[in-house]
Length: 453
Image (cartoon, rainbow, N blue to C red):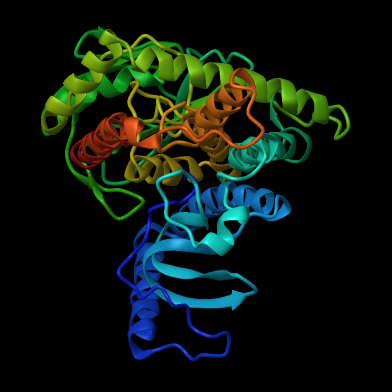
């Protein structure tokens, strides 16, 4: 997700020649990767494979931005790989080695001399990142984020002009109180109790339900019990006992919930004129970006962190931290329903597993919801990479700006190199925090998976 300057594996550094055949070990690695992708497709359907490839493509585009900008600036790029870990296959064109590695979790680009601590051959020093002009270094780092933002804008344009969206806008407020059951999953207590499409649940055990997202915190803690569900059918209110028993989900996993899917009402799809959709795409991109920033800002507050901690601690109990936030972001989104265009639930950061869960859930309602998810993911990836701390791209931007300011202050003709060694303790803290976020979000998504109520 950032320019690689230390991500290496144990594979010998010397790349194979362009006409070298794959070794037996590389064939085994490719077989394992292919088998895992086949297994993924078999267990989650074609959409599971599409989501994984989409995430890889998203990160690939980010690194492609770095790669193209570095090449145009004359910097030496030694590696451009898709995936991490042991090498599967690679080839060399000029000074750059291109290829695939066994873990399809993204991509990376290696540009020599990303900071003053990196040792580089004297003959190559003139083509290092650190020796580049300020504008070149700035463009190289920003290019990755720019690619993600551009991808988001293109996807928004496609949704507006080609697919069509409710009311002709993907950021317009939606009345989530106007909904009904769109689908009852087979084998569920809801089906046995006689609930059907078109009903609207108004209460669970006497607790009111206004929006569909209100169901999850009422249902999850009571998994395995029988609850009284009040619903409206043709204007008549009824109450029936519903057993929250396990049932086979569409992805093959066993669920233990109501097993109902939402359908929002009065959602006429409208397409926007392709030309008019261009400026509207930029405007809606801006709205999405602001909402994503607000969502991240709310999360990193004492209340937001406390709610997240409570979610992690209570994950095995199925309890969700309450939230009154109605915005949608990719990293602090509201996953949990299959509404089609919005993915909603309690505020929580998502691991890759959580993103996959939301993606497969969104794909159940069509391509439109999946494209919207990738809009949010691209925006969130770009925002996170702008954080002005190493190892994020924003950290490299901050260093470049500091070095430029020092050059002007000291009236230097040559380059001023920041003492990156002094930033290492802070960088280690950031990496430690990121590792903690990775572990806790992965645990939360495994222990309390995002699913339908």
